[in-house]
Length: 347
Image (cartoon, rainbow, N blue to C red):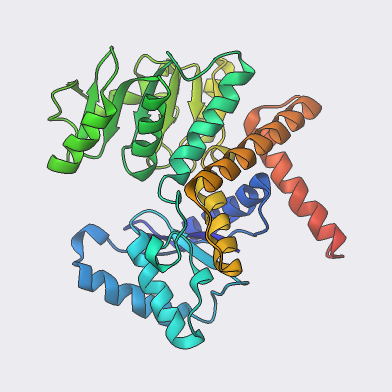
């Protein structure tokens, strides 16, 4: 099984179960050989020192070391965790089971992490966006994008879209939001964020209300932050023609209905953000083989998986005349059902 470990104040068993189920369908859609898992600790990592986080992580690992394993359950980083968290889990796990680099993914490169893993979710989002736009005879170049959330996923997606000639007209994160109708200079914004820690003081754009970002004028909206940000309050005002769900569950069911009626095309999260788990799978494969790939191979394989999954989803949509979300879930559930039946587990 595969899934992230999140450190966040709102972690609770229901959320963890829901996210683990989502991972089951996501790995099936991406066609990688895992079931879904998830874990977390209810805490605010921002309030904890580095040594507190390390002690917390090591004690957590001592409690779960017999539940995780190379062929049982392979954790990865999620909200509030990163490569360093994975390094501590690996080290603590290895005290019980011997050196086992494949027990977690998203590790630092020096401990067996994969090249390209850091950018993987954002890069996957961009490959997914290209596949969707190509269906409509469009490409990233010249399109107007809005990116909500500028953490790992949002900042990588923004950089790559900017590189491919897309125009990013608004960006937001926890610290605030900025807009520039002529397109924001993303490399400069990244330097500014690195230096100051916030967006809104950036001189290459005008400050705006962070709540307005989702309904800002654009062609493509990419929510990269928390779930439930598109709801019945704001869905009717969304101006984008395409929504790429880089976050988990950013669109609630009511918003989904409102947006579909408006003809907005939504690329569902279980496909759009599967780049992270796909490159995690590549990392695990490299660890098991004891053979590391170069970054070019990682990105090439990621593109192959993302475009393959898109075409499988499209085929489902054509067969069942349904939305992309329904097509993706149908594909995922079908694959799990087929495997279950083949193993003789059917009720």
